[in-house]
Length: 340
Image (cartoon, helix red, strand yellow):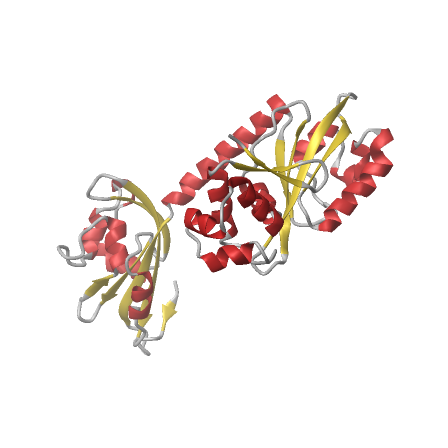
C-alpha cells in the first residue's frame, strides 16, 4: 500500500480536468471531518444525478455487483489494509447497465503516520473487454479471408521487412529467415531480378504503389498476385510505417481500409485534387462548400503537397460523394475518374 505524507494534497485540479467525462471518476474522503467529495465524472460513471445525490461511500458500494461487494462498515479498514488500491470490480448502475471499472486508491497520512484521508479513482474499462472481443472477431475475419480468398492486409514499421506477415509465410511456404535472407525467393524465378529491383525503387520513392507479381506458393504452383503498398506518415511528415494488401489478380480488389486507406489518401497530390475538381466542373468555392473547409484551406490543398493532412480527408470525402474515384494503377500512378 502506498502511504503519501502529503496532508495538504488536493485533487481539485484533477477534478476540473476530468469534469464532464463519464470514463473516469474521482472520489475523496476526509477521515477527520467525514466529508466526502465526488467528481462529476464519477456521477456520470455511476449513472447518478450530481444535483440529487450526495457523495456517499455506502451508496457507491451498494452499486457494486453482489459478487464484488464489500461491507461499507469495513470500507475504511479495507482502504487502510490496501485491499482497494488496485482492483477490478463490476458496477450495476440504476438503469441496469453493467460497467467494469478499475479501482485505484491512496491513503494520505500525517507525519506521525495517522490516516487523514483517502482519494481514489474509478476507470471504466468496459470498452477494453469490448475491444478484446472486436480484435478477436477481426482476427477470425482476417483468417477466413485468407483461407477462402488468399487475401490479407499487412503492416510493417521498417523496410527492409524484418517480421513477415504469417499469411505471406503460409502462402509461400517460406520461413521468416528465408525471406529475410532473400525475399525474392517467394517470386517466380523469371521475375526475381527485375521485380526485386523495381520494388526497392518504388519503396524508395515514398509514393503508394501497386505491382503484379507471380508468387511461388507453398503447394508448388504459381499464381499472379497484386501487391499494394502505401507509406503512412505522421503529422510532422516522418514515416510511421507501411501498410499493404495482397490479393489474387483474378479476385475482386478489396476496398482499401484502415491504415492502407490512410496511406493511399496521403499519396493523393494537389494535381489529383485539381483534376477531380475539373472533372466535376467545380470551382474552388464549390469544393470548399461541399467539404466544409475554408476557401484558403482548399487553395492550400491544391498548391502544397505537405498542406492539410487533417483537412485533406474532408476534401476527398466530398469529391468521392460527388462521384470521383481515385485508383492506384500499376506502378505509382493514381488515376482520377468520374463515375456516373
